[in-house]
Length: 143
Image (cartoon, rainbow, N blue to C red; front, side):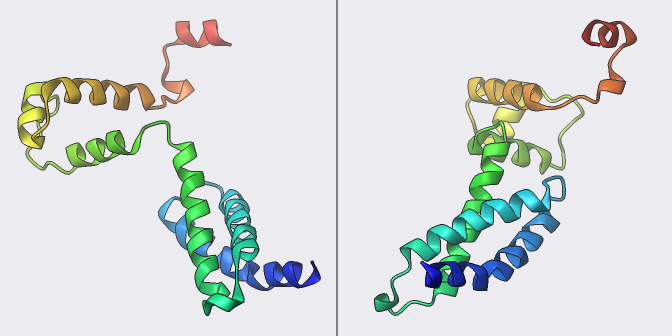
């Protein structure tokens, strides 16, 4: 047990390093939350570590830590991965007009129109709106 605890403590700087790297790409997520998720991954790596397999704990830990952080980020995202990729593909189309029709998008992306309509609705529904931008009448009802 003491050896396990020491291994965890020895590799905590690795968790912080990986969390800081990921935090640079996702600054809207709290660094402490990434570190917490990474620590859980580290604990899993230490528990699964088998010195007889001729692997370094650092290598296994890095894989587990990064995976735990990415799993945490996926939990925060309300959209499935396919819909998020659809959104990125739409954003990357340079010739896209202000309000393209679903048929235009479907043609450009090579997707069925129904799927484009459904995924576009999901993307719109997932967007957050700052409270201050809501009309006064709506803000009074909410408050």
